[in-house]
Amino acid sequence: MADLQANQVDQSVPSMAVIGAGAWGTTLARHLAEKGALVRLWAYEPQVVAAIRDKRENTLFLPGVAIPSSVTPTVSLAEAVRGVEWLIFAVPSHAARSVLRQLGPLLSVPVPLVSATKGIEEETLKLMTQIMQDTLPPACHRSLAVLSGPSFAAEVCRGQPTAVTLAGEDDELVRRLQAWLMTPLFRVYRADDPLGVQLGGALKNVMAVAAGIVDGLGLGHNARAALITRGLAEMIRLGTAMRAHPRTFHGLSGVGDLVLTCTGPLSRNYAVGVRLGKGERLEAVLKDMRAVAEGVRTARAAKGLAARHRVEMPIVQEVCAVLFEGKPCARAVADLMERSAKAEAET
Image (cartoon, rainbow, N blue to C red; front, side):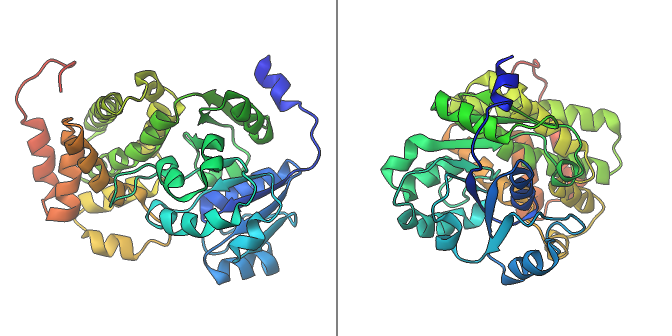
């Protein structure tokens, strides 16, 4: 009943900004516009701005999807954030700090900022909200939230039912943002564990690369099911060591997103793994991709976090060996299978 009431809140037309015009950022901008908001969409690529302005379509990252006229594209961060009531941040993790440094001085008045980026900064091993705390004015820190969960952009744009998690430390703010985001086909659940939600959204991409490798090798459904289950165990171990709530990983941003990205053909990370399993080299795979496969960069960061917190993550370790050390995929799977016998509750 509370969720239904939140969805029925009568609000004046809000002005919002989405920073990052990849497939997911464009989808969120379109989603908010269809709810009646005025949305400014910042893109790094001038050709994306031109395509949305002239054709009402993001031909580079979201082809074939009409974008409402209430979405205004821009290459100017200052123009994007001027006078808006809240922001969604959907910039790939490797570029997040650079964009946030430019964004910080433009936020003269603190506004809520929702991170929709699923990644970990490779150099510092920091999550997106931690980077935001490094780069944004202190007055903004309490107004940070994160959005994650099983949500392929193409399916959201087709109006197929989707459920996600929105997490933040300020419950009143999260409830307000939930009301703005909710629709009958886009269900938003509240959570109070932004750390766990971010870890789930980032680490599942590494497991999706591993699942793709399993399928690329043709190892069957049994192997993929085992990979997903043991991948979740690794995610929970690291999350617990970092003081996230274990229950978070059993929710939409954990097991929900994990199952989707490890089984769905729309997953970029899964697709990378499949091609690696079939014998292609990483450089060739990435060269063919327009959009970012976050799992490749996150694998190295996850290995670093595991070492920092003294957590065993054998799947992450083997994915890194395949990606960065030239280890054959079949050998990596064999090494996982030949580990010493353990109880399931053990590492």
